[in-house]
Image (cartoon, rainbow, N blue to C red):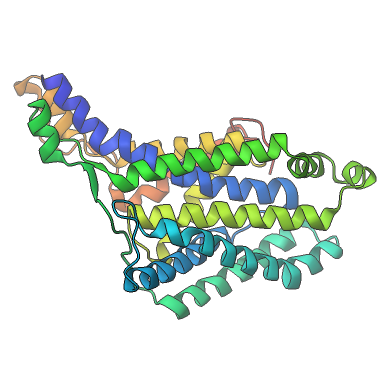
Length: 336
């Protein structure tokens, strides 16, 4: 019974949060890796793109809630997601038309585009704060739990409870659907194959008659969909706060680089590596050890490697190690 209690505590505080956070990072890292693979620069504005998409979803959700519209047990934000994706795609296409396109035509070095993306990042960050403000916005509604810790204890007779939030299950399901649609699009459709050809060899793709501007437009639309979906799912799971999405930039980039920049499979794997590393290293294992060890060996401390305040340092440490020993990432993406 103690082993089951330890497993339940581990599932409640490490496994389930790791899967949910990993799904959110994987969606974010997929957007970064698509931009790097096709447009060939590291887009530092991606975190704030997530914030912008989530902000639009929050505002539309508030409007729908005010009109009395809801999805019953599901979050109303699901109804606002297509609108948010459309608005975010429009913003990215306008940004590309008036900012990035100029530097592409000038054949600017990737480092110039990185610096330009930093400028775009600050502008988008200011725009989001100007529209919705810097404070927390909670927009999740519907059923909060699929099963609460109290119901789990009653059902199983264990002293440790397992709480499964509806937003956690929703995050995993939506992430699986989004990733499946992306891989189907890239591998089965003519446009997706054109994007892969453009990514592999731009000159050969141009000789084959592939329209580069169409590839760029489709790429930004897909990135908008991935960033907005990731931003909304993160906001539903936690809450919406613009600065939080700026902080997410480090673990998202770490996930993309650890998996291998330009490699979609690597971005997904990297997301889960970073998520489980952050959650595991910052979790206090005292309760789990208390179930598994004899009473005389029970730890008196929290058995926590580092405080949750420094969880982003885990991403940074993994990023440095990967860049030192395997710059192409776990799945052999493009070297930095």
